[in-house]
Length: 125
Image (cartoon, rainbow, N blue to C red; front, top):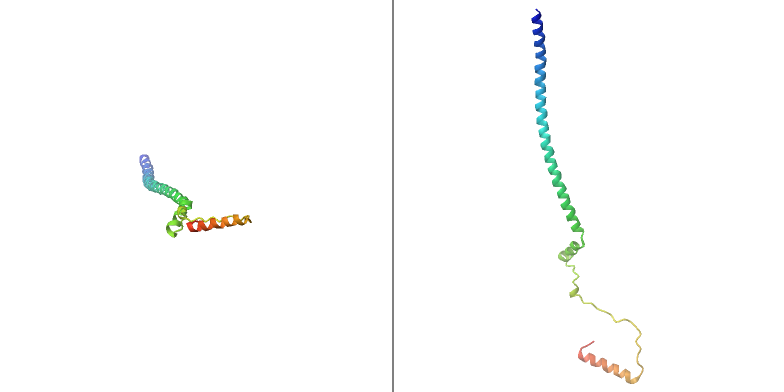
């Protein structure tokens, strides 16, 4: 009977240990597959993060370009015809307003008038 009790105890022990090992093996395999899935997902997300950082840098450079005076100037001239071409401008300078002393001498006044008539005939102003 003694041997029967030992075998019975060993059999009960194996009945408990074998399902426990099987459960641990199933959990181990499940954990490994989950870790692999999460590792792949993390790698994908890191790549997406890198791409978004690069896109953000590119957009910041583009924004700085759109804020620049040269881009605004090119848009204004290209789209709206707003140019400031200095070579084609006509610049008018007015004579300064000042008190010209008129020569009260009769002969000097005639000389000035004759000089102005000659200038007008030549086409000068």
